[in-house]
Image (cartoon, rainbow, N blue to C red; front, side, top):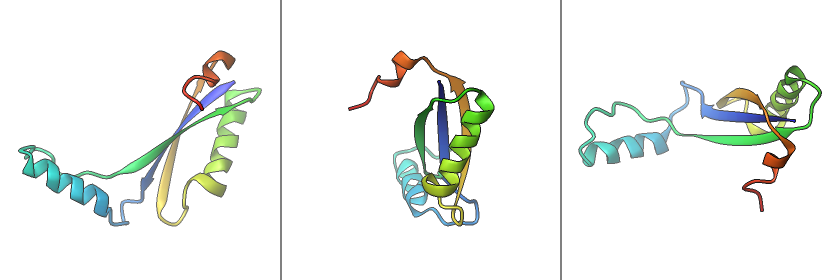
Length: 92
């Protein structure tokens, strides 16, 4: 069992109005050192696979087919071993 933590962000060439709004709000709150904010999303996916390579392949296919928009978003995958007991934690 593997846990894939997938970070999905807008491509650098895509405008990020949410990030810009947050950056302005932080500046207004006195955080003048904050120069830029880019927002994104994160998914945690538990994959029952025989190897880390297989888990990465499944996660990559899931991103390419559903989780990320290939035109506007990039994704990064981190894979770690997970116990079956940990899978049920935090789910409804």
